[in-house]
Image 1: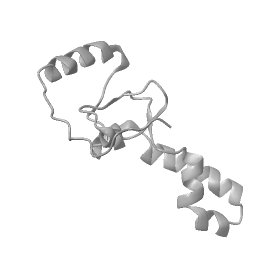
Image 2: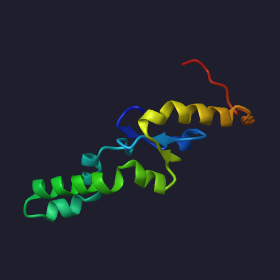
Image 3: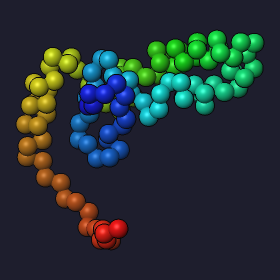
Length: 113
C-alpha cells in the first residue's frame, strides 16, 4: 500500500500482502499517457482529437484505475478504509510473524560500481 495516489503491483517484487485505500489509483502510468497509447487510433481519427482524448482519459480513469478493479484482478488483496490502516497492518504483521522463507542462493555477487 502506498500513500501516493498511484501504486503498482508490489506482488511482482515479492510482497506477501498488498492493500489499497479507496482513493488510490492503481497504475504503472497515468491515464493521460495510457490513453495516448491505448486509444491513439481513435484519438487520431476523431473530428476533435482533444475532446476525444479528454473523454477517453476520463473513461480510462473511471473504469481501470480504481483500486476495486485492481482487487478484482488480484493485484491487491483488499481495499481498506484509511482509518483502519493501523489495525490491518498489525493483523497482517502478526500473521506473517512466523513466516520463514528460504532465499535462493545468489549466482553472482554484487561488485561495487
